[in-house]
Length: 93
Image 1 (tube, rainbow, N blue to C red):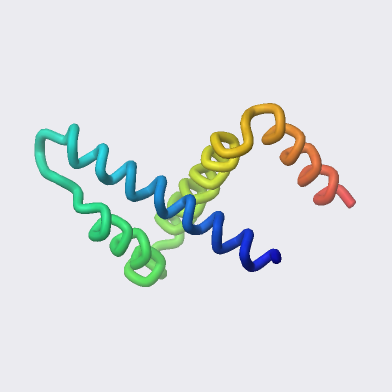
Image 2: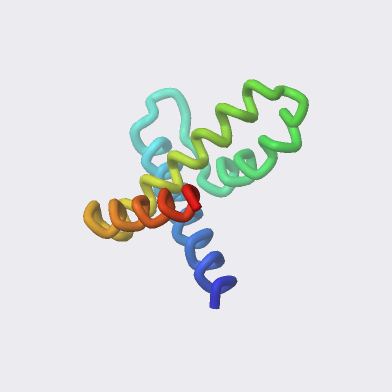
């Protein structure tokens, strides 16, 4: 069951990322961003820049923020706040 939830979360995140790349392509005057190319590049960041500690820290902060925003959008502000409170309590134990 937990694996299914993780796979669903990954699928939702990937779908949102694709939508973001599509929007960037529609509104960017300088170029069109192909969603599959953008996703491929995101998947290679940790391999390409594994020795750049500062960049990797910033990248994973971005990923964590993205996941939180997706969770809040999916669950709504009230349920999201409850989930965050529950996680905080678990971390304090």
